[in-house]
Structure formats: structure tokens, C-alpha cells
Image (cartoon, rainbow, N blue to C red; front, top):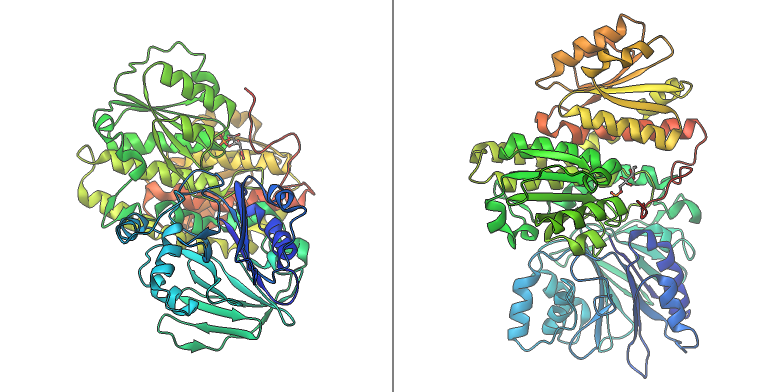
Amino acid sequence: MCGIVAYIGKREATPIVLDSLKRLEYRGYDSAGLTVEQEKRGPFVARVAGRVGKLEAKLVGATLPGTVAIAHTRWATHGAPSERNAHPHGDCRARIHLAHNGIIENHAALRATLIANGHRFSSDTDTEVIVHLVEERFRGTLEDAVEAALRELRGTWAIVVLSADDPGKIVAARNSSPLLLGVGSGEYLLASDASAVLASTKKVVYIEDGEMVTVTREGFRITNVDDAELRRRLVEIPWTLQEAEKGGHPHFMRKEISEGPEVVENVMRGRVRGGEVKLGGLETVSKRLDHVERIVLTAMGTSYHAALLGELFFEELAGIPAEVEYAAEFRYKRAPLATRNTALFAISQSGETADTLAALREAKRKGMLTIGIVNVVGSTVARETDAGLYNYAGPEIGVASTKAFLSQVVALLLAAIFLARGRAMGEREAQELLEALIRIPDAIRSLLKEENEIRALAKRFAHYENALFLGRKWSYPVALEGALKLKEVSYLHAEGYNAAEMKHGPIAMIDERFPTVAVVPDDSVRDKTLSNLEEIRARNGPIFAIATRGDRGVSSIADGVISIPRTHEILSPLLAVVPLQLLAYHIGIARGCDVDKPRNLAKSVTVE
Ligand code: F6R
């Protein structure tokens, strides 16, 4: 989820790309860099570990009259967030420079071949192989070299490339990572999203997967993989500059919910192959994992809710006894833990949550194998665990966690299937589940199209002051998460309960002013939950339900239903949580709340 930008025109390029980079910083901000083409002195490169502001400070006083530049702000995936890993990356002679967003899956094999051919690498990134490949294929024309190099890559990319040996030109290409061309008057910009070009132009061409664009001051040429020239329409961006920073969404929270499909694809990428799960991040500890007899999952907040699902996955799929502990409790409990052959999973979006870190350190002290499920690369939890998986959800800016939850649940599911090898899970069962998982991004896409109905439901809901969220088994953690989201962003009091537990106390609250949100997909406990809902109906409590499309039983007793597509029951949380996130978002908006920065909260809780 990096941000890339490039400029070619008549104006001095440096201030333009720096300004654009700042607008892309939400996509990642652990390092930044730029390359400016200079006619006589060769390419000028500046890179820093840290934010765009630091790069700007580094350039104060520099004379950079060049009018062609590429720039990048990074969210580390391969290689620590350091200056040496910051983009742009150069070839062996520092003549060709390249910035990249995406992941090159076959980088290890390409790197080995390139090194054998005499190339010298200077970073730990997957990206650097591309620039050396372009160097290898360069015969005087940059676009031909890039085209040849692209044929050898597997993975995802948006790239911008320039070369001192073919000056006055930028070549860019896209495969599954966003890229657009901004067309100004006598100038062109390339960028990851429209926010980065809006200060110069509102006219853009969206570059599609498999396309390459060659830009000079005189014009641009878009070609496809067969080198056929494509005629593309200019599109007018309908947003203001301010709106565009959120990619056209009014809030980061909504933007991040809408990224759900992409997030699920990212966490699976390269890990689900031929009906099997391959987790490079766990290979180093695979021998110890083979002997694991017990799993403890620890986390806080939304990550804790993902951990509750993780517990079910490990027990149901891998047959390994598992339990979830609030990280804040784990540290202070003197529970008799058999620490040998126990693995602790620490789940944290930020990787910096103080409670989770403390639990992790305690587990290490006790000699447990520690595994991180972390979104922020290079964060403390990621560094201090023995092994782990990154979620690759990209930067989450909205304070209420949404897309990170989805990616945590998928990462835990993959870890459970990985551990289930040779244990409780058969090959066919794994294959069926993975096939269903691959269909989840499209199912989420279809759900996101139902936003108008969810908005309408939110309007009916917004005047209440309390709400109960209910679910059983797979849907119980989802109910907890739905309630947490709602209270965070709307300040409406909401409690998540197990649907069966409800009649052991909370039912006393139910009347016509106390609504229930029931998560009741068509799974093995659906009938039981339905009976619990009858108990609420009998007491005149309004019921809003998340149910499987076409479930007449639920719609006959609920006052409002949001339908989700049918899926494998283990995967239903991935679909049920999305409408709950949207419901919380729209109720928050209807109640006039700052959904991106709810009062009293911070994105990363670094105190215990
Ligand atoms: C809720 C939320 C928090 C975090 C919690 C743990 O929307 O964002 O509850 O989930 O503070 O944070 P991480 O996952 O960064 O450890």
C-alpha cells in the first residue's frame, strides 16, 4: 500500500512531487524518496527513513531545477523501513530509477539469477529486482526494456521508471495496484490515486491492469501486453482536493471498509496455492509448531474479537486446544500454563499496543513459542515474536479498526489450516474451505453494493440510545465487534452478548425502546439463535438481523434484515461484519459524530 507519483513537464518537478507525496502519505509513511532527472549532473536521488516531511527537510537548500521526477512513500512489506530500502531504487550504474507499489512474488528467484549475471543489489526489497531486470533488458529505449522486464514478473505492481540514458521520458505500468495518469497543460503526472494530481489537473486516464504508459513532454502512449496502442478517454475527477485524499470517500472509515475485498485478497496472496496454505512466515518455526499441543491467543479490542474467532479455527480445524486471553489479563494471571509445546499468538494491528506487548514478553519469559499476527511491518510485536504473519491490510487511518479485523480473521484462518496439516483436517476439507475463501472478496463486493439499504436502516436506528448485539458460535465474536464499532463511532451504548446468554440477564432490558441486532447466518446454530430472537420478539424488542440471503424464517420475525451471500459457515464472520461496520458508520454519521477520530480514542494504545 505504498504511494507513487511522477511528474514530467515544464515546471520544477521537486516541489510538485513532494506536495503530491504528502497527499499519498495515508498509503504508508515509513520511508520516502525521490529521483529528479538533471540534464548535466545525472539523476539526483534523496531517500529517508520516516515521513515525507523529513525528505522535504533533507532537500532544503538543494538546487534541483529538473522537470522530470519520480517519488515514493513506503509502507514496508519486504525489508525493514530504512533508508536503504526506501524507493526509488537504482540499477547498478544508478542510471535507471524505479518506484513500485505492490509485491513481486518471484523476487527471490529473479534476484538469484540477476546476481549470477553480475548485478549488485543494495536493498532488501522485492522491488529492486525490477530495476535490475530493466537494466538487463535495456537496449537504448526505456519502454522496450520495461516491457521486456514486466514479462518476467509475477505479483502485483504499479511502477514508474526513468533513465538517464533515455531522458525526458517516464514509463509506468500497472498490474493490480492502482495507477492513473493526470493530464495537465503541457505536463503529466502519474500517481497511485487522484489526490496526488488534483493540485495540477482534474483530467485523468485510469491505467488498467496489464497496461503500460510512456510519457514525454509531448504526449503519452498507452499500450497493452501485446504492445498494441490503446485509445483511452480522459475522465474528469469529480472530487475536491480535500475529498480526494480519502480517494473520493467522505471518511477514512468508509474508505477502509470499502477496501475489504482487496484486503482479503492481499492477505491470501501467495499463501493459498493449489488447495494448500503456504506460510513462509511460519516455516522457520515449523518443527516447533508440529509439536504444539496448546494455543493461547492474546490481544485487545477489535484484535481480541479476531482472536476469539482464531480460537474456534484452531480447535475446529486443527483440533488443537486453544484459549483467548485479554493481553492485559494474561500478564497478571498466575494460571498454570504448560508452557512447553504452547504457542502464543499475539494479534495486533499496530504492533505497538502496550498490553499486547507486555503479554508477549511474559510469554517469552515463560518459554512459549510466540507468533505475531501484525499489520504494521517492523512494529515492536513483529520484531519481538519468534515468527509471524503480516496481514498486509495497508495503513488503517480511521481510528476504529475495520479492514484490519477482516485481514486478522483471514490470517488466523490460514494459520489454523496450516497447523491442521497432518492433524484433524483432511485434504478435501481444506480444499473446499480455501475454495470458498477465494470467493469471499467478490461476496464482500456484492455486499458493499447494498450500502443504500444499510444507510436506510441506520436512519431508523439512530434515535435509540441502547442496543444489544447477539450471535452464537461463529457469530458471537462478530456480535461483540459490531457492538464495539457502534459505540466507538456513534456513542450509542451497545453491548455484545452470546444469544443464549441473553436470557440469563440482559433480557430484563428488552422493551420497544431497546433494539437487538442479531447476527444469524444460516449455520449450524441458526435455529437456536432464532429461538432466542423469538424470546425478544415476545417482549416487543425491535430486531434488526444480519441473515443469509433468502432466509424467510429470519425476515418473518425481524423488523429489518441485511442479507449476506451464502458461504461456508466458518467464513460467515467475514461477510457478517462488513454490514455491521457500515451500520456503525452510518449511525455515527446520522448522529453527527466524527467517525474517523472518535472522542477519547487513539489509533495505537501504547500505555497499559
Ligand atoms: C477498535 C480498535 C481498538 C484496537 C485495540 C488493539 O476499533 O481499534 O480496539 O483494536 O486498541 O489495537 P491493536 O490491534 O493495534 O493492538
